[in-house]
Image (cartoon, rainbow, N blue to C red):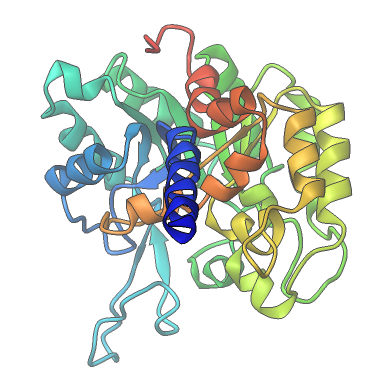
Length: 337
């Protein structure tokens, strides 16, 4: 009899734990509808993945470059790094996104937040191009990005000059973004694959300082999987990010997948206390992103992978990071529910 009572007690305890387990609704703040060949699994599969995984809202963007299948390559590469062929700026990516969103029902469209990305960040004509796109679809576009500036090996493969987040072409775009109340998502690596210092930090910090009325989302906080292959962890990232969040109230951080490990979680999958404290200190400045590219079968896995970190936060902060902070950064004219 005693062993049976013990088993029942354990069952009751487990039921209580499960009863109080948190369940989150998510906003995916970083999703690409197409891949580097401008192909997609389609809106139907994206909606199914969202519905199956409590993802209520998504930032939806294209990919601003297309990978070339070179004449000398017998097999098409599967990714931009598959061979040495160029990538080139591809403005039609926004047309693909707009067409997909415009086919949705009014109820479905409320869950999608399209960002413009199909422009060359080195071209001072790009601000005019963005304005034309805004005029063609009034009320559709809710942000700009993901803007590819320094982006691992993709930078070297992309035809033309190396894009920088602090060049004159981007300065014009930041002014346009502020005038239209649009947030800007930047991919700008904080360093190279080998330098153990924030080599390129000034390229992000200068726009933050010079454009206080523009809201910036820093994709992956300047990190990338490619950097981590060469440098497992950037020791300077946490203090640098802490200082920047204190100095620039217009800075927001996308905690997409390259931030999950090695930063938010340790090797055992446990939340790192110093990162929990940073998010608690700036509870409205962080958001989650899957950074999926044209395929959506792993969307739920990517978003739910953050749950252990969210569970370590106070519940009200966790729900802001999981869902609400992304919605709060959108234009004031957007209905947020």
